[in-house]
Each structure stands twice: as structure tokens, then as C-alpha cells.
Length: 220
Image (cartoon, rainbow, N blue to C red; front, side):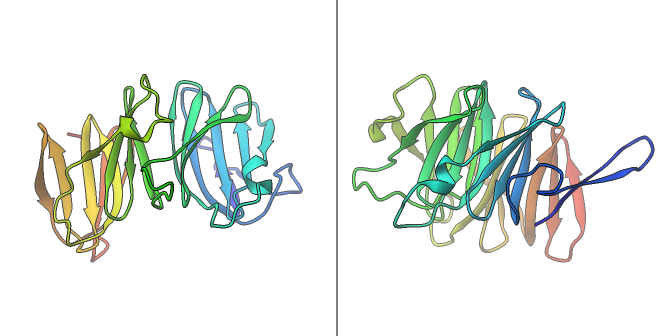
């Protein structure tokens, strides 16, 4: 739950904590927005800090302070323009990064009971949200407050739960609980690799870790 950085030129290590200006403890995950030059910091209690390029820290505690009956856990975030789309245990909520305030929360079905959203990624104006059993698509140019504007993407092997989804070079990669990695290309799913434990993307490179902890990289 701690945070530190390593300077690339001199290997200087700097630690970040409440002593240095962070607003909470027990960091759950971090993600960087190149467009906004901020580091998104999510804590286990759903408190949020934004660490800017000049190392100013902006706290957004609305979700942390909100009274809710269920879990408020933040599982993932993606960025488009001035907005951060948060994948949460209660669905999706949108943070206006410039105004430092929440803009909208989406109900993704007509029951009013949202699935836990595990991952959220975007290609241009399309937002892809992953739950254990579904992959939802919403276009930010439409009214996403209306659940009917969210569409279901076909899900390969519905007998196995979804674990993780990433997008690289316009291609969707989906990891299922049977350690099988699928690729969505040209409007269809194809089995891509087996015995896979984890996937991630950085600098347009897909990093794939198999169950024996071997790492491979693919930039296509």
C-alpha cells in the first residue's frame, strides 16, 4: 500500500505518504494519464488523490464519504479527454479531472443493480466495461445515463468468468478464468494463447505472463 518513485537518471528513490502530502494510507492501485499529466491514486477505502506533474496533490473524497450500502471499491480507471471513468463494485462513475468533481454515475441495466465492473478501457469515444459475465460498450457521444445505450459485446466461452481486459493498438484482449487469452479482431473472438496468468499494456506493448511466470511482449 505504499508509493515510491525512482528517478531514471540518478536512481534516486522518493517515497510518498501522508507525511509528504498524500491524504490517506493503503493504496489500492495507481494509473497515469498522459493527456492530463496526473497520477491517479486510489486507496482501499475509495479515497482518491491526483498527483500532478508539478507534484501538487488534489484530493477527491466524495466517494469515500458517500453513504452506500454496498462496496465502493474502485477496481480500474480509464481516461478520455478531461474525464476519468472509474470501474467500481457498484458500476461506473465519472470524475471530471479539471473540476475535481464527480459528473455522472451509470446504471447499466434495467434492474438498477449493477454488476461489479472489473476493468474499463476505451478506444476513441467507445468505453468498454468488463464484469465477470459481460462486456458492455458505451459511446461517450450518446446519453450513457440511459442503460439502453449500453450494448453487450459477444463474450467467448460463457462457461468461464472474465478476469481482465486490455486494449492494444485497437485490439481487445480478454483473459478468462481458465487461463485462456482471447483476441477480438475484425468483429470476432479468436483464442490467442493458453496458460496465461496476467496481461497488461504499456507504451503500445502487450505484456503477457504465463502460469510459469514467463514474460512475453507483443507490439502488434
